[in-house]
Image (tube, rainbow, N blue to C red):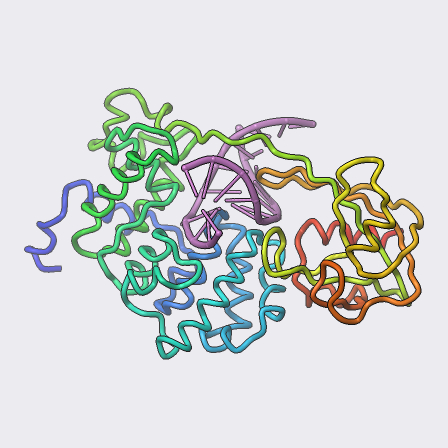
Length: 358
DNA sequence: TAGCCGTGGGA
DNA sequence: TTCCCAAGGCT
């Protein structure tokens, strides 16, 4: 490292890089320089914890080892590798972006933050992360970790979502990232937030930046940043039909938008009130008339701002739809052993366990 | 711009 | 049990 380059960074920046060099966790995506593999990790890590992502990242990369392999696959082949990870629009956008990279960039991710930002699923964070980590560019990032670390270090006031606060955080990130090893510096900030400068019980005694921390000096570490204000969850009641034939259940593929978009499920309809005509609702979702059988119970799942209640019934009809009908793009009779090859939500996996259990 | 979009782990 | 939320993006 040239002395002139090293002298251009602040003592805070140098301290974080030195700390990162010995404290960094050994994560699988830190062993590769492949921009595609790094991109995949960044998308999977959005709103998702490291321990959850690791096995998904490894399975996905083994099945789709290159941008070209991903772009060439049908979305229906890709979603099974995202099943259970949540926020499925990430997978749909990843797939679309892979096709755009092949069509517009010759199959290689562009080494440019603005060009990355134009691809589906690349917001300001992911564009900066891939630009800095995969390509060594001085691109800033602000994620939840960086926001918390900077809020404390520089006493940035305001709650998450506050415009002036976000602007200030991005200004700080843009200042600090300038200098040697911008990718490692960005990762050092996030690593500090994840392991030391945590939401609860931060370990300030072990912090490499404690000499530079405004919140620590002011005794305000616990109160910065203020917690996000969340809307109360809404109740979403659904009725689900288990139509069984020769040990298989009829599943439909949801439209590629909204909740669980593109995933497979037992035919499902809104069930907003007790007086809803359940067979009529399920017949509408299926595009076929069905009769109602045994009640198989209720499966409850909690999402970030939905409380799902899935009321499961056996149903029966004369002939099942083969083509798109009702709310679904396609239908399939699915044996238990075939479930792993379909894109399913965790909620629907629970429902299927119940349907086959009875 | 604020609501929507999942999941599992920890306190 | 209940609440929190973790490497955000889209509309």
